[in-house]
Every structure is written in structure tokens, then in C-alpha cells.
Image (tube, rainbow, N blue to C red):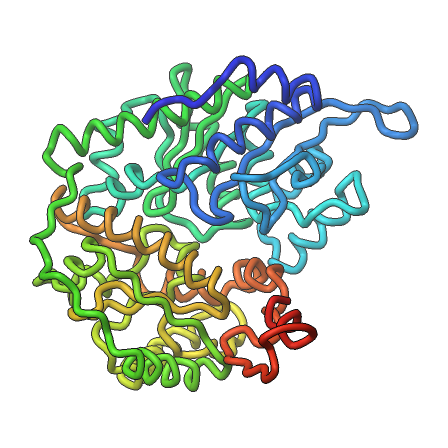
Length: 431
């Protein structure tokens, strides 16, 4: 992976917004690379000292707002939170999700600021000016193997602190606050969260960003050196275009389970078809997503074939098995699949809108790469089902989907407009 840093571009962002402008710039560089983050994933921050309206100097953490996408974030997408309060929160023994969100929002210095990232406290406890967090494909490939921790330590040595998987939010921030000071040393430039992602940090925007690129490149080199980088799939036969009535029938069954009209997209790409025909697809695809926050988009596993009812039955059993162990009572989400792997059609994705279905496609395309590379490295191993359930049913994750708003009128439906060859009818169709 190569750095996309440009002195000319960086100078333009710095002129417009100073250090926060540089934070915007390198955040966009991260968001521009889908092998690092996808569709709202990852988060970034910068710590600045600023005067308030009383003329008092305060340390402020500008952290990505929840639901913002790094690819096109601007200064308004960062929530300014008083750093001193975040550090006090990190010393608490416990903090519920509603309490945490309230504390984050009520200690912003801007009333119209977005809700701070659920990782705001974690960013606060890392003693660096700039902090970057991604779900880099190469890193999660390495960590999602049976000996992932040993491989991470082999690759990075004392350049990273290694943290076992902990539920994101306050619990993870507490663990990092405890572990990081004890394990970080002079060479430390990052932190790997097993089966989750990677952090880098530095005193400048460029240093933090280019450390991320360096750390991810080391993981990529590890995969290449062990013959696990190149994606190897047997060629799939040329696809036969599915009959529209068959696609419509499957979409109807999925929509009935979802309780609303859904969009079903059939992607006729060779990789998706070959993966759907992989001899071990039933084992490797059912383990779970590459990084836990993808589960809110993809569900815990794909539908193999077209037996939608069997998928729904398995999903209900999954809910009934894990809901009793949740921290608070849960209501089951719809049991409709979001990813379908069909040996004839290949990869199909489902969403409330065409955009949602496209997002699922992007995520699962990268998931296929992670799974196959991890298999070549020694075997793909995702998080245990209970951890996936906790993430899927975490209110703070589901809130990200709700921020997208309601779908447009007639989304997922067919509208028939008569007399639409010209005039008002034609304008209605075009609208």
C-alpha cells in the first residue's frame, strides 16, 4: 500500500482549517482506500488546545462524528469534545451506553456537533495528537486466523500494542486505558485490535497517516511472503442470465421476511460466482464477517442457495440462543438475508434501497478476499457468534443505519404512470 499524501493538497487543507484541516485531509486519504475502510467504517481524531468564550484554554478532542464517512468528511463532521472530561470518564468502573452517549454529547463545545464516535474515549486515552483507526483488509486477514496474535507479534514486534477483542465503546476504552501505558514503548507507533482493526498515531497528521500505511504494508508483505496474497479461485463457468421471474420470486420472499419491499441485486462478477461454488463455502462463509461492525449490513452469515425460509429459521434460532445473554432485552430484527451466494447466480445482495444493496456488495467483495487469504494463511476464524450478536444488536451500531433516514417513496416498489409519454406524466416519472 502506498501513501497518497500530497504536499500541495495538504497545504490547501491547512490554509483552510489549520490542524483540523489537515485532520480532514488525511481522514479523506484513509477513506479513499477501500482496503482500509468501507462506508462509514473507521474513525480519526486530533487533540487541539483552544480558547473558549471566556478566554480560557481547553484541550479539545475533535473526533469523527458517528455516521460520517471518512471518504468525504469535512470539518463539521468532527465533534469537539472536552478532553479532560473524557479522561475522567475512562477512570470509571462502568458506564452504560446511554450514559456514555449523554456524557459525550453534553460535553461537546458546539451545540450542533454530530454525535461523537463510540470510540471517543479510546481516542482520548491514547497520548498522541493525531489518531487514525481503520479496518484494514490485510490486518484483519492476519488476525482472523487461529494463530493471529502470534502472527501480529511476529510482524510488528514492539511497534504495536496488541489488544484482544473487546466490545467497542466504553469496555474497549477501559481495556486500552489499562493496557496501553503498561505495554507501549519508545518504538510503539500503532495498536492492533484482534479481529477488529488497527490504530496508528503521531504528532502530525502526516506521521499518523503514513504510519498507518507502513503498518498495513507490513501485513500485506507477510501475506505475500507466505503465498496468501494472490486470490486463487477455480474458474466458474460463464453465467446464464437468471430469468427475471426467478429473481422477482426470490425478491418477494426476501421482502416478505423483511416486512418491507427490498432491492435484490444480482452481481455477475467471476469472483462472486467462483466463491459461491467454492467446495468449502458452507464452512468458510458461515463463520461471520471480517470485522464485527460489518454485521449490521451483512447479517452474521450469507444465504447459500435460495432457501430463504431455512435462512430465516436459522436466524431465529441464532436470536433465541444469544438474546438471553445480552446486557438488556432485545427485539429480533428481521430474519431476511442481506448476502446471497448462489452457485448459478453468484453473489447477490439485498438492501432497502439500491444504494444499500451496493454497500453490501462492496463489503462482501472485500470479505471474500479476507476469507480466502486467511484460509491460505492457515484458516479463517471470525468472532464467536455471541460477540457478533452483541455487535449486531448494539443500539449504537443500529443507530448508524437509522441516521440514513427513511427510504424514498416507492423505494423497492414498481410505480405505473399512465399517460407518461409527455407533459405532466413524463415529469412525474423523471422526478
